[in-house]
Length: 245
Ligand code: NI
Image 1: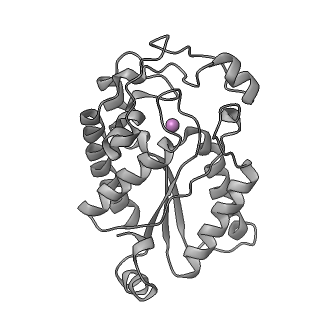
Image 2: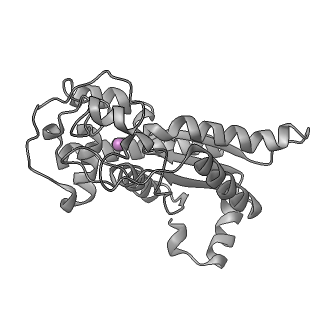
Image 3: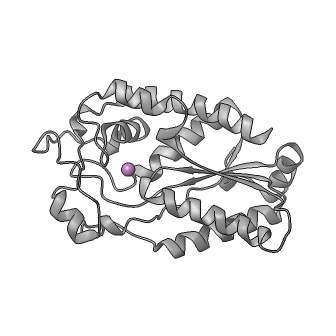
């Protein structure tokens, strides 16, 4: 169930049946010469939409911007400061909690967001803990590739050239979601350099000149994307059921 396609009376009715809501979080950032800018939004969004067809959890529109300062030397990247992302998450949680949601699950598509989302969660809980009050809700942050079994699946599908950024797993998912996300160019070198600190935007571009880190994007296919989306969606449903209980 998509919040953006519901009316407020429908949301009110949903709250009588469930207190759980999924908030996809992404980033608008370069993904190498063949990966689209919305990769980190598209991945959690398509997996969450597939999951809600299995079990009708409520999903909000995705947060499209994240902590992506290290990608800013590539055209099109839009970065939030960590403090901006933390404030945004706090306001989203306060809004959803105000309506009575008690299980708020942030489903993340960008590794650079992880630490900031965890800090945002601590800010939300801390506002209650430091006053000696019990927090009325539970939060969870989950990266889609860290759902149970999915990282192992990625390693099995891409034993060489998975890498860390512009990876064939995330590109496969975008190919499955959108035909127009597919590119057939073959970047050189086939497997990008890997292993340097990401650092700031200048040092990232120096270490990773075409934007990829360790990845061979030519391994990405629509069929592998379908497999990744469906297995991730099943894992997400199981996790949401446990989180809601
Ligand atoms: Ni990504």
